Length: 300
Ligand SMILES: [Zn+2]
Image (tube, rainbow, N blue to C red; front, top):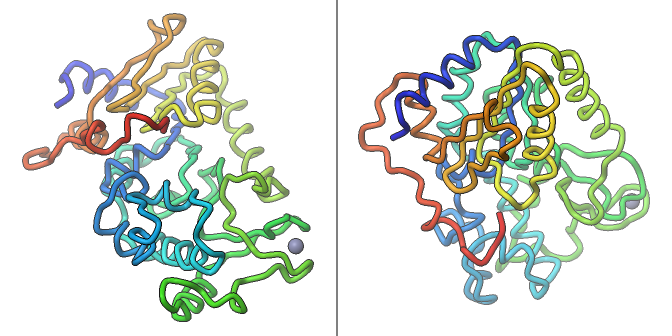
């Protein structure tokens, strides 16, 4: 449970803000139970199939970045994951956040690629900094286009045999014939026109609110890629006269001393914190245990 005085302060900040900039990352999804990236849960087991045992991997992160699976096996893994992204439930943290921001002037920047924000918020108020599993790009990339992949994913999913997609079915670029790749952060991640337009929209929101009473609400942003959300948020709060910074994170609720007077850190479970903010019951909710979910030898 979060201290009531912290809840009251955050509620007051949300109510009084002229604008709210939300930064959402993996902790938001983890708090909703999407932990297969880090843990050997039932979701991971169903997505990985026999590949988990074959390559002795126990979470999606490790299996994705393993170099040993064949292309067909990697595609089977990707197709199952993308299908899951389309079909899984909407996380409760997202539903609660939408209730909390209803009627407010807000904008969301996220490093999540699981499209959960799109379940409950309008697309024009979101910028995805690291792409989105629901799109493919040329793996090279040879041209500036991303492809919505729902239909193709479901079709190819049916063709998986023995935990591999047959090589001749691997989707290829219509221009150069290279393999397509998910439009998510990688060495060949396409930051083309589509990406630039979304970044521009985000920058415009920031510029138009720089002198207003702005709340930066950071949700579950870890230390794996602090340069995308966390550090810009801290910098803007430092520079903007009327900005306030709130970080919700059970593991990394850090505040630099330079912005201490304009900040609030809540290092508790995000799902529980949101329920408390809404004045809803938290009875029976199990707090998110970072030590349980995260591998201490890895930076998230
Ligand atoms: Zn190409």
